[in-house]
Length: 185
Image (cartoon, rainbow, N blue to C red):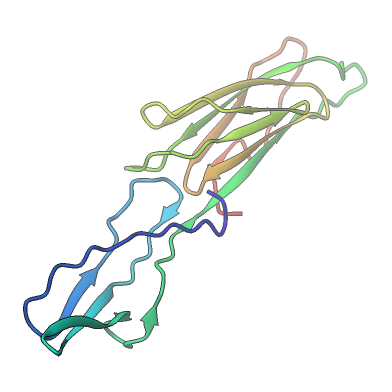
């Protein structure tokens, strides 16, 4: 989940018994990871085998896409994640600005996807990992006083959320943006 991460792999080629051009179609398997977009380009690995003094060599090895024939050196996948901030504001002349109010944030994985990334959240300067998703759901409970914000980070794109506040005697509650879908950003 870190931008610019690179991984490499080694392809073990077979032993070739005859000269010729051998073409292999390379595609990436679909992923069930929430927020991950797999490179959908189809690549072709072309191996040219020639004879030289009784020996066969791989003379050319390159990736080429079937349409343009351009060489490619990598497959690029993209992880998209966003953030969510929950802020408490107390108004009114008799409002207790020190009072803690209880909140619950419920996150749901997109259909047929699994959240594999670590989601963190910060409340009152303390950062913690959110619980892991169980059966596609993650629930986080926290308290906020006036002016405090709970900041959730690394929420995969497509995760939906609902934030609820427990009713507190003597206070009327209004809310905005308490449900939604995480977008990349």
